[in-house]
Image 1 (cartoon, rainbow, N blue to C red):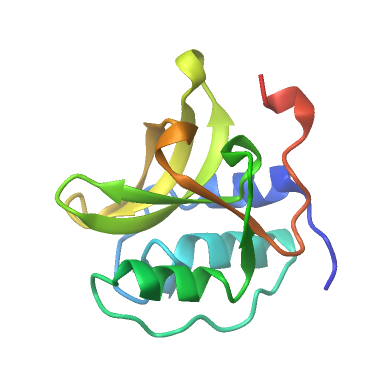
Image 2: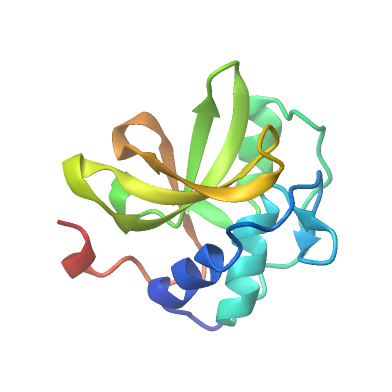
Length: 146
């Protein structure tokens, strides 16, 4: 498996902002769900992570972790992660792609939002998520980790 840069991966994810949201969506023709965003972004950056598992509309914690373990490993420093496992108010489980740092220690992430019906950006805190490193993507460079 060849390695791609974190910057190419993050920029590919940012290009998806505004795309429609669809359960099990993996490309622009059908829309994206939260797992489809990192898969497509990695593919556009040059890394094929292989197929994703089929999961329920609102997967359990165990199902989400089992799916992530197919292509990523948990990491100790969430600020270096390629994927964040997040909880949305109301109990939904999602994954988000951290893209760039902003003030106050928050990081802008790309996430699929069912309520908005679109892929969008949201500022999240690294201490409120679980970080995952995608196998085959370089770590975030130190200069972006304020």
